[in-house]
Length: 382
Image (cartoon, rainbow, N blue to C red; front, side, top):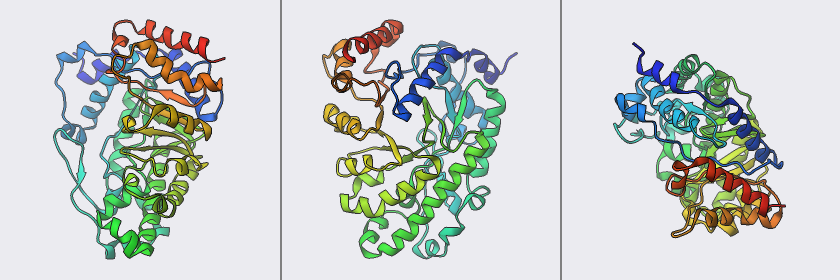
């Protein structure tokens, strides 16, 4: 009798031709080239076979690589069964405290919410760390990195090329600093800026070191790779900047921008994600050559048309969702999303990922939805 893992692996039958087409479309966007169509990544479908098996909560997954793989695979099966440009990849999902764990910090592991750090380093502990010593050799045997390596190797063996693996949650230099040191970071920006720069050098080097170690284990180049449904080329990492949304433009320029640039540079650049409102630093972020694209955790806080035009002005791309408006038909929704590209006559600058709420028609007739997406581009973008 097949185990649950063997059963769900058998169910995963990716359409390699479709996935390759989606990969090429996404790669074109990353390189600033014209894809045949703007990539669209619709939501996965429900997988009824899963009802035969138990679900494993986040705590069970954290401590068991097979349970984690099984839960990832059910989503991949749902994505593989429908068309679109989504890629198939999973990660060792070990929480936002993953990089801070290399400094000896531990997380609380919960049943149904992601892990969270339970302590911080003191200023004296941070000052005792030499930033130049924080590198690949420093991080690879510390904290949760050996666990991630173990999980990645297990995933690779079981997947056998059916799906890819992406980096664990590496966050970004300032987010790691906030996690490592706590909220005192905000006052020390003013009271002890030299110390904050010391801390940020450490966390930037940890971000780079961990990313390089995991990429080597995964077997992907520094300047390309996967992240969930996303394929990355001409830039190989994601940087999270949630804490940055709490800072002023002046503080961003001194304490954030240089470290984002340093963190992304070894990987040929990358994309930046943040939740909250980042209007105060958005243009400065887009002006950075290392930043190739953006993703908003709260897109509802941004005016779609002006924001998308700002992104296109800087020859960057947006990856993610902008919500469908109430009473908006599917055609009206797609036309609004395509309007900035219609005005410029380009298909480059967006990897669109509408949610199930925004695309209920997807489950009724996915091909009809895709045909509309393509036909509108043929009519509107010359």
